[in-house]
Image (cartoon, rainbow, N blue to C red; front, side):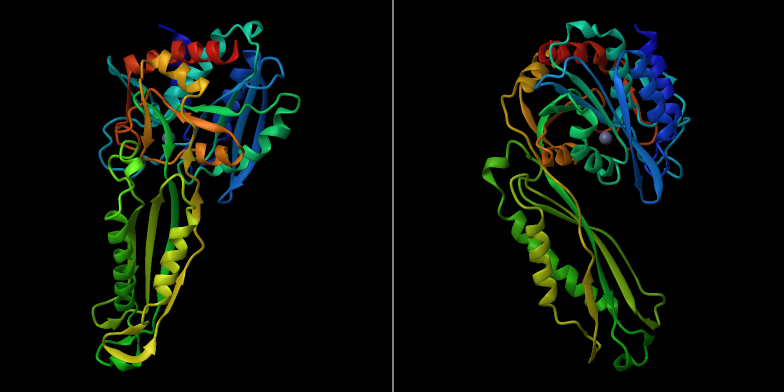
Length: 393
Ligand SMILES: [Zn+2]
C-alpha cells in the first residue's frame, strides 16, 4: 500500500474545487507534485463565469509522435446544501473498504493515482511522450477542456500532441468509447400581466408555455418511437435522442395573469449526428405555435429560445492500441457508451480520440457521502503504469 497515493487523495479532496470556486490552489499542488517527479508543467489560466480557473498540462518523455494523454477533471459538483451528507465532504475518511469524500469517485481518486504513477515512473524508459491534462469546470459543461484542447499544440511546443486520450471518469473500470452530445437552452415566453378577472387585457405566459411543451413533447414522442438499431448495444437505456424538461418557472399569484414563463431544457443526441439539428427542429416547431392565450385572443405572447450551450459527443474508433491496453490492464472485454458527457467531446474537436475508463463508481458520482471502493482505488496505480508501459515504452 502506497502512502503517497493516500496522501495525494487526502490533499486533493481537501481543496474545495466545486466548479463555482477557483481550482487554482489544487492545480498548483498537482503541478508542483508532477514537477517534482520530473515533468514539465504549464498551467493555462482561464476565466469562467467570472472566476479565475486553471487547466494543467504536464508532460515527460521524448518529443515523438504517438504519445498518450491521460486526463481528468479537478472540479467537483457542490456538496453544501445537498441533503444526505453525514460526513465531512472535504476530509477523506477511511472506512476500511471505502474512502469517503467529495470527488473520491468523480474523479480525484483517479487523479491521486496519476500522481502516484508519476512518482513510480522510470522516465528514461519512455520512448514516446506521456501527457497529463487536468481540467477545470468539467461539471458545468466541460468548459476547461473546451479551452485546453485547441491550446495543447502550442503548450507542448516540440512535443507532438498525442492523438489519443484516456479519461479516468468513474466507470467501475468498464471501457467506453462513445457518449451523446449534450445541448442546453431556455425557452422564454413573455406575455402581458394583469388582473385575472380581465383576461382580454393580458396574455398568459404559462398558457402559451403549455403549447410549447406540447409541441416539443410531440418531437420527443417521435424520437422515442424510432430507436436506432445500430446503437441498441451502445446505449441500451435509450438508443435515440433524449430530451428533458428540466425546470419551469412562471407566474406570481393565482389571481394574476402570468407575465413570464421560463423553461429549461436539455437534450442528448447520438454521437454521429449534428447536435444542432434537433435545436433547429424545435425552433421550427416553436415558431409554428399560435402565441395566443386560451382565455383571450386579443394579445400575442413573445416566444424566444436562448442560444444553445453545447457539449460535443464522443465517438472514438474501436480497436485502437489504447483500447487493447485498457482491456489487458483492467480485464474489461468490451467497450460501450456512457450516459454522461465528458471532456472527450471537446478533445475530439482537436482530433484527439478518447476512451473513458476509471476506478470510481458512476452511482457514487454526485451523491452525498460519495466514496470510492478501496480495492478499485488501490488497483489504479498499477493499471496506469501498465497502460503507460504499453503505450509509451
Ligand atoms: Zn466526472
